[in-house]
Image (cartoon, rainbow, N blue to C red; front, side, top):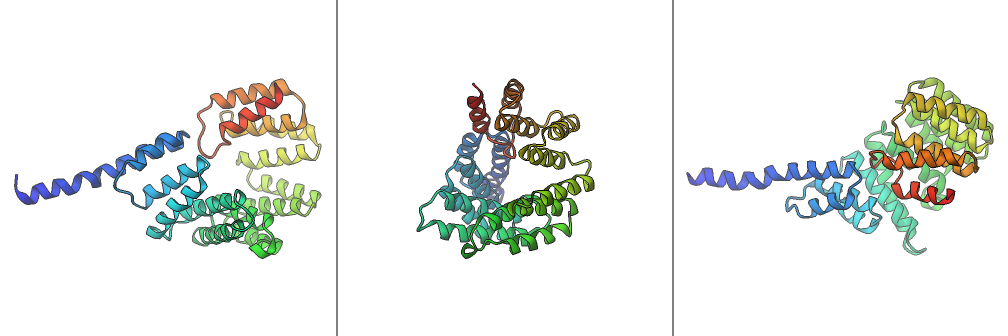
Length: 282
């Protein structure tokens, strides 16, 4: 074989193998097989931004937040304009802040805010990034960058591309202020604007359940289940509401058992949460 052809083959092999490895690892991640996904990625010598991001996501889902931020920081250095990557970095620093001591937590919280704000700047249409940043603004004290005014400004930004999501954000803000009537009104308006989005009815059902309006809450959950009968998250949310209300516990058990048999994704509540709810019943 000609020397140039040999060199081409040598160069092509690792470059061709790496995307296939990431694709397999991403499939494992989407099936919540985080340890297996991580093992595959760590063995890959070609760690580009996508690989490092997925490594960081796996570490996050496994609760190893320090390793998660380290991998995600390396990914961000290679791909600073990736909005989803910055959102994951903000989440990871947020968890580090929550699990750290009083001396280091403020620094991690500041990094979380910066990453989440950058994610929203890069992609103002991302519900995940906007939701995470909204939670930060409402939960963090002012000296760490939180505040109701920032939350309200963020809701207006969200509304430019998704009016229903703006009403949902305003409902979260209203409930934070203990304006319960206002929160309910905003959730109803979100559902009216997006009648095909099952999440709007679930959000309203959960809220009404918390406010003791159980009949309407039950009806909305039933409507949501008819709209998306195979959605695991609806099973979990309905079961969680019943367990918290200490009623219909046999139904809650059936829903949780069905949830645990479902093919879950990283967007669904972890299996450990469902198992913890089951233990409350038995």
